[in-house]
Image 1 (tube, helix red, strand yellow):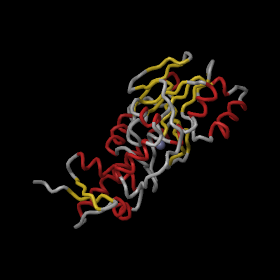
Image 2: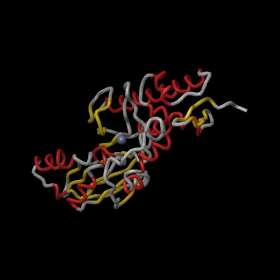
Image 3: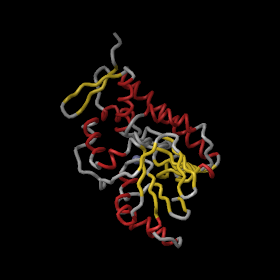
Length: 276
Ligand SMILES: [Zn+2]
């Protein structure tokens, strides 16, 4: 949340968050929810954008997201339909988890806004999702990263888009002058959502190391197997992260010409692509 003449919200939580957390907090600091002028979304996942439709209805505020996020906000069911198509064995068909919302403005990498006298820069950081972005308060070196940088741990990272992109953006972020990193959840190893000083770089280096190791592990499992494997089978052998992250790594390998998939009833089976 950025406070000025008006209130700029970065992300909006789930559909219940406005009444349960956001409005009470705004009142507790002597302001009023009607002062919210903008919601800038780090990405289009239900736990970050779900409250946006409620807040927009209550306040008439503007909703901004990266251009790749627009279709997912304006059609709330799209994300789950796509995941079901890509990974049918992990994601059964399901109802949308938030209410669709009309986007007022989209942004791209490098865009700079002046909102209420505050300079806000956008860094497009895809990997967790295609539209993931860091929202940067440049004057203060504050980077609000949503789920763009996930740290390292047995259940991390959780990627829905691409591990290759995630590795690329982590390398790029290591060159940014970040003073304070605000993440969407308290991610391991520090389990804190606000990181400063030394912890910022350590968190990013751990994130990078984690995904690079996971990627090599998946490739090794695929190379060692004498038969094609499903995402679930590879996940069981690797034993860490999440099936969907492993699915994203496999899709990257397919794009690079290193792996291929075949459809077997309700799942895809993956194997190393034979070099001709
Ligand atoms: Zn997310």
